[in-house]
Image (cartoon, rainbow over all chains, first blue to last red; front, side, top):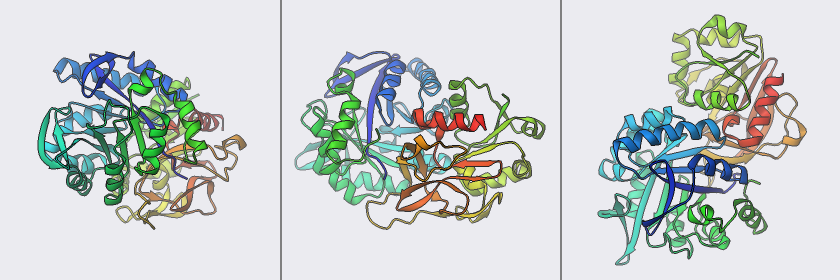
Length: 251
Length: 196
């Protein structure tokens, strides 16, 4: 049976791991390759590396980091941040990444999804959506949650799927950093609407939150950052807990 | 040991090369028939689309070279599918090493997502690439097409229905999953291949 996935996310700035609380106020959390290797040993199923430095220099540093990750880590990993065109995708896949995650660039130019799927296959293309719950609606945001758009979560996710997205990574800005659980109601609606895997993101604080996002939220994978970086939840402990709760995970 | 990786327009050549490096092997990435023929082991990786890739292999005359190799050969993912007779992906005839066809996954219920992506278990594992401890271990898959269970099946996985996670015939071995991305279990499988 296909296992539910646990995915630690590492936000990278100038070659180091950081994590935002509600997308601002960063705290340092270690060396990205070391941290990734440690997560892999503890039983992480995949890793996500997000480049949050937008500068040209930062991008070069990040590409070098991707090469080091590919050389040292034997589980799949996704990279995102600063991907605006096909040649960015080519550069990162050539450096050894398994998948790319696109966010603002896809909102600005949805055709990019189609181009990635055609050139590299749908399985490579993760569409990340940052959305905030406001006025009884889920509104998609650009630029790491700074600029609201006209797009609504469910419509945009369906559009992304039809254009060839291989997975949806949905971050609830409403839940991110609050550590009170994932946006399970919205996640379950996405699961009902779509036919591609959904990665839940934003809100993990306790082990129960992971269980709930797999059962109530029907997510295929759960992403988290700070609870892992600061050792609040151990990945091995989490997986044992989930298996005891009847959820199929890789041990 | 002299290990050659078939060089062509496949997506995971470098991942396979990195995995071999972690095992202490410096492989040669090549499309040179002479180097492929004289290698102790040949790995035929693959991520991409069947028809495009088959056309490329034919243009480069790699199709004839691969199916006539005599040393242990390991096909991975699309590499395994291309070693079969025919693929529904692009409606294309393949190398015909394994006398079986490649079919597209058809979802039976809403939860059946295609591609089959993530970690799944291998069962009924056979000697060669596998040892008994690998029964029920998790490996990493990403694919939308599958090889049904047949006389060459060397490991089985269940997704929508049982399918071939691995094939074996004579000196030809193949995995639908990615050993190069399957953590420590994948390393054991690659090591088993290198020991053949």
